[in-house]
Image (tube, rainbow, N blue to C red; front, side, top):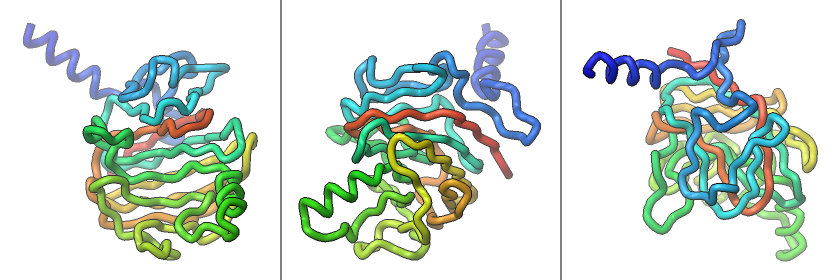
Length: 225
């Protein structure tokens, strides 16, 4: 029994899929959500459609990896299916959310459609000074991060240094380097934002459901020293 348990634990620690020639390992097999778990959403919130991870956006919550990661490079493609869609990719996330809070604690890499900013400007008569739609990076909950400039006026977010994300229904590519408590984000091939001194600096990877339909594909990870 001890040997069987040891073998089972070893199997859980191994990558789910074979590594590509560049050292990246797929995090999604295109058929089901093996390797992921629904934390606090409805059963129908997260599904697989046409080889993509599909999220209805309702209720607010998260889909996270079974494994925890510390030092890695993550690639993911995403697209919103409606204007003003909101979502996010969390790194170094907690296993569960705090009581009464739908979000996991961790560092969020914002996934936001341009229509969100347009709606804000229409409603308030000015552009937002506390968020952008091009790849903000910021700590959530009790997590901490020292943001790279440019920094939001409230001091919590790393704003993108340049604008490169595309609006719905176009696909966007994120390249996230998270090593030794530092995170850097590339949007469609351009480094734009990030932060250092992150706490925690190890944890789960999470996809966020936040009110609107969104899809993810080509999720790959490469763990690094």
